[in-house]
Image (cartoon, rainbow, N blue to C red):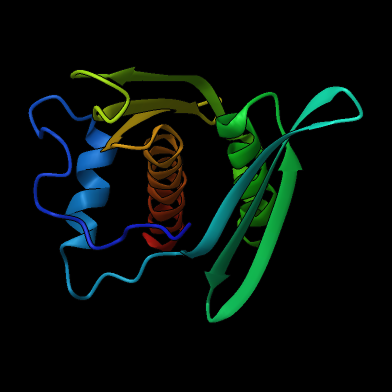
Length: 165
């Protein structure tokens, strides 16, 4: 599954979206903005293996023109995606070692299984907290996009602080 980076101006309700999500959306609307990483692909495998549930995620990203990947098992699909993404990003941005998702929740609005899903991810690095929110018709996709936004937000802000005099 590929990430959807071509975002419409209203991929969330700007009145209710957390500031980190608004910041990332604003950056992506700037034609001069270069994201610190680009998601090439991601996948979650949920299977029963030897009588036990096994959920694994694989994430491939491109950073400064080089592709790298991370894989991880998780308690659920969102947890596995978080661990796999962190695994690959920490190699390139070591300051992410202290970053953790503290809360992850979704809400499905509307009727039926094709209703829109809102995913909110809350993060901390031990000094500050931030939240992201994304929508999709797919539960994993909405959570994945919120995870990507959360890591992108902290990477960009951390790098900007390092370049300030």
